[in-house]
Length: 280
Image 1 (cartoon, rainbow, N blue to C red):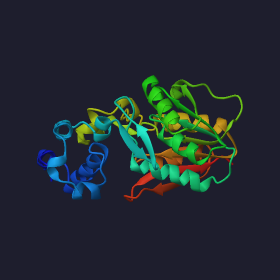
Image 2: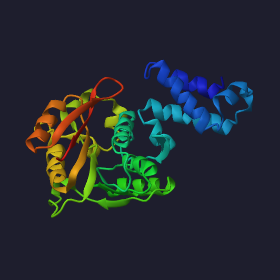
Image 3: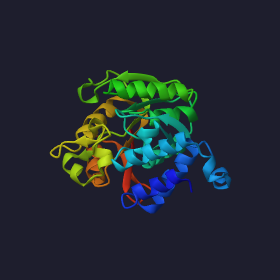
């Protein structure tokens, strides 16, 4: 193994599980050395340039200080697509891919009107747009920086989305329904949980996209549910990503609004992660 990768493994040992370190090395082999894993294993160790060796050592040091690999590289993959990410937008998560998958499986028709509230990097809206070319998709976020990143990602992935800077907590109720589907992965982590979270999240990713007050954890779900009730067309669907401990509370909230059949979907880790319902 080239010396720089040995350095990386030693630097991260004890900070990350061995399996995660192996995954980081595979990513660096592909994205920094521009080699497939097979090519790397067959390549002579001393043929890796000192410039790239130094780059890998620098990445190892930044990882050891808690900086997310996705921000270091400036790129991540989501639903088979490439996304630019940087501080100021949330890094897309694997469980959010499951939300996109559920939406696509449950909504096979074309020419839909879809709204993504709190779009961040644009990952949900762009993944759906890439699979539903004839649908009309809008995406909102309060952060202008996140929207700048999302617009770049839409352009890079060759999809058309209408982006808008919007604070959903202050957005007025619509005069007429307009959407077949409304989706949101809003902030949902109570402030008190920050102390138990990894520093690579709390010290680098935008708190605006993550945390809610302890005394009002359903703040965004309440506002978005009310907005969705007035904005969804008949038989329109609402989809939320949720905190694993808030499922029953959000179900009760949606039932109060008279949404039909609110349903919890568990993620690949067996945790409550998605709630969907229909406006009857």
